[in-house]
Length: 344
Image 1 (tube, rainbow, N blue to C red):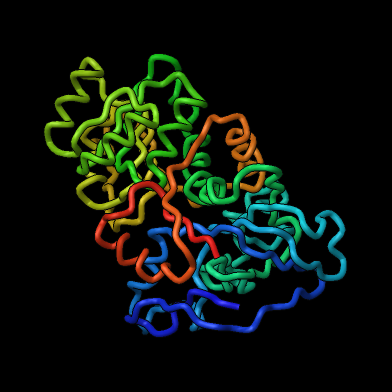
Image 2: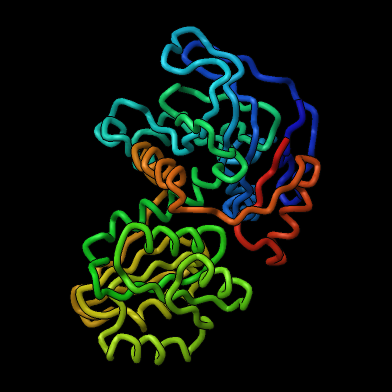
């Protein structure tokens, strides 16, 4: 089968021929119908060789959808031919976090060598992908896999972050979304579907601000110093009740601290390397600053239902498997608006 692999640190990924895996006990072989491309892959490929944590070559792709092609022994709740989404943050399955579906916060995964597909295990940017357990697939039904595959990360990550901030999303509240890319534009849609908050989207790119408005944002502003005064004017000087930073650079973290109000929440989702100092005097009193990682299995099921009802619609750009290396180049230069999806 063909697969997109990162084989050598510092070199671009390439399309290669590899052996098609066979499912062992408890495993599923999924024929990939769609695989999302994520900025996290660029982060992985930027790591130096002395700090690279995964064995190479690595088949990329942690957003996957497909048709179940073969079943290992003991798999009894998934059928061959079924269309599924792949839940990515695999855990041990038996700890307290995993027992409530929060495998994204499994404390034992690292020590047990359990890694997500595309982030340690062979991923979905291939014609077939091996899934370690039937609990890690969610029925897709008749949803289009190309449109739905970003739900597994670009949808699930903001959905989880928004769920954690629900107490701040009351009617009359103001929410700021920083960065309206693959995750941010989904966050805008989810905020509109899940709450009565007023959404202010910030981005340096005009095309992304237009995407924010199409996604349901009430306001879309350039992400600069003028945004601070504009948000304070829109909130009568009180500041935002919730801020979601989908960039995570130092400039955006600083911006989040300047626009947030008291007793509010700042959620850092982006991996841009920024940090927010927290002291008694700053940010404002009562502000909760937190990070999140991916989402729970039950949240992915809920998100699929929202998509089925038309509440969330990810903007996708479709590419063939052979185009995947050039997609990463386009992503690096900021030419992807929404989510790139590879169709083997």
